[in-house]
Amino acid sequence: MKVTAHREIDHFWHECMAWGRALDFYLQENAYFKTRLSQALDNNIDKEFLEKAEYFQNCFLETDDKLHALKKNIVLFQRQLKNSLVVDSALIKRLLLDHHKLDAEIAECIMGFEKLKKAFSTYLLSLLHH
Image (cartoon, rainbow, N blue to C red):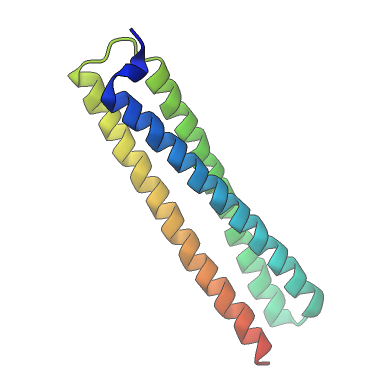
């Protein structure tokens, strides 16, 4: 019996694929903002800017770490799905709990990234007015 024949397992699998695509997008966005920061550094060397740039660089590096950790957790969840030989209500409950936890962690990470993105963009705009 093929595990993916079960609706719940199949749904979880597709959800993992969607999460992976979303996290890949945010990794690309994060790389873009690190490039933008580098470009801004080329034009600004005052102490205040350097402090702010260091803050944003640290935030971008932390975001990379979080995104990569989430991608690893998705792979672990997928392995759990793949290795589920006996699909019963106890397994589905456990998978559902793991799914909710992972979903919440991904949502929190994305929300944090969106706040960081807005703060960084706002800061870059403020530099144009100086």
